[in-house]
Length: 236
Image 1 (cartoon, rainbow, N blue to C red):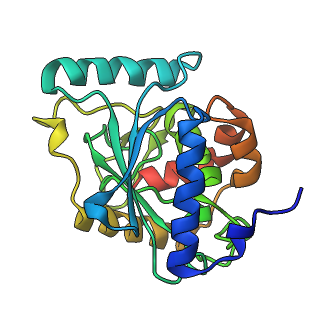
Image 2 (cartoon, rainbow, N blue to C red):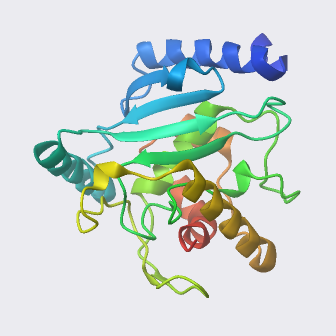
């Protein structure tokens, strides 16, 4: 099947065309876990997604849904707020992905301590699994969500952090009000710490974005493939 014409576009035109295509897919109910897609502050280069209704057939998805029910009862928020920030030379450079709210338990869901997502595919590392201009939000979002809810429990030890246990994403109800969320500054700082860690220690086997996109958010195969890389990402 030929690639859609919009994938050959660059810069703002590519972002605009991809937003239109992605919005149509959401409206057609292709993504059960996306509650809403919008532009943050009407800025085309910053997309905001509200995520909920994760795969209940996976233990991690079921537990995260229960956490969101508690969050709604306690703080009137029933979703995870995620932002995707695009560079002006997209798709030459990858987009940046971070959770805004709520705060999550450190090391869980392959999310950094600052709320950012640091996967090999979101970096220009020059490694086999790093960013390619052919990647899209749709294909990588599936990888991100799979890694959030379907990942092994692992003991995490870091040079600077407190250490702990990784595993499926959990909301941190012990941090005060978790809806205060993460700042953009702490998200980017954690991303760069994680990236430096991978430059020293390498990346684990990465999930292929195209395959994960086809499988959907309920697939555990991509999560297993990306577990090593994402565990290191959580360590930041």
